[in-house]
Structure formats: structure tokens, C-alpha cells
Amino acid sequence: MILSGKEIEKRMGTDIIIDPYDKSCINPNSYNLSLHDELMVYQDHVLDMKRANPIEAISIPPEGLLLDTNKLYLGRTREFTETQNLVPMLEGRSSVGRLGLFIHVTAGFGDVGFKGYWTLEIFCVQPIRIYAGVEVCQVYYHTIEGEHENYTSGKYQNNSGIQPSLLYRDFEDKRDI
Image (cartoon, rainbow, N blue to C red):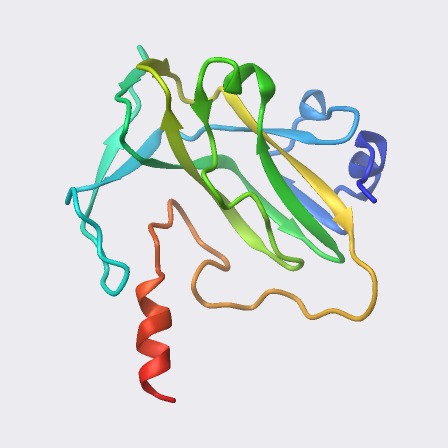
């Protein structure tokens, strides 16, 4: 089941932590999260799954930043979230999607016990100007049935900013087997 907005609000500070929290961001069954003022882009056109790919930071100025098509931008939410006993899920807001701006390409699924900022995989269909602080996505919460273990991976847990892909670590770990 998905938690209602009222249930999200009731659990704030216990099962759910959102910092900063703003009651006006509560929806009927989700909470709006906003875009931080920094993005990252990969420097190389060709990316390699087996290595750390070089990245470059870009700031979103107050007048906004024009995004190019066919380019992946990594961003993050302004809000730090922590979730216990629930599965957090991230979706773009429909108003943002109707402008052809995708907020996550594949990683909308969170793990029970996740703590950190959500890294956003931003891609646009046509050029669009974006602004820091805009509510671009929403987090919603599924209940979890049965015994479970909290997410404890060192890859993305307790992050402090935008997280580029750390998939190359999976290849390093498999060398030890």
C-alpha cells in the first residue's frame, strides 16, 4: 500500500525524515522534493561501466540554466531523506514531465533504510531552462511486508551530494570471488 499524505505527515520525524521539511509540499499521497543548485555532467562522450567516469560540476544560476537535449545531467534534491520500515519511491512531477523533462531515467526505486539525497538522472526532450529550488519530483512510500533488512550499501548510503554511477565497484568486488 502507498501512504497517504496525512500518513506521511503523521510519520514525519519517526519512520520518515525529510530535511528541510515544508508542510506545503505534502500531496494526497506523496511529498514534493526540489532541485538543488548544482548539476554534474560526464566529461567523456563514451562512458565505461568498469571505471569511474570523469565528471564536471555545473551551477544553476539564478536566471536558470538551459539544458541541451541528448545529454544526461545528474542533479540532486535539496532535501535529505531517511526512511525506516517503508520503501521510498521517486517520480517526476507531471507538470515537469509535460515539459519533456525527465527527472529519473531508471532509478526511482529506493530501498528501505535509505538515508541521503536523491540523485536525479535528468534528461530533456527539447531544450528547457531549469531553476534551482523548483519542486521537480515527488517521493511516495510503500509499506513493506515480512522481515526485512535495511539498505546498508556503502555505494550510495549517507551521501552528501550528487552521486555519479559507482557501478564500476561491482566489477572490483567480483574480482575477489
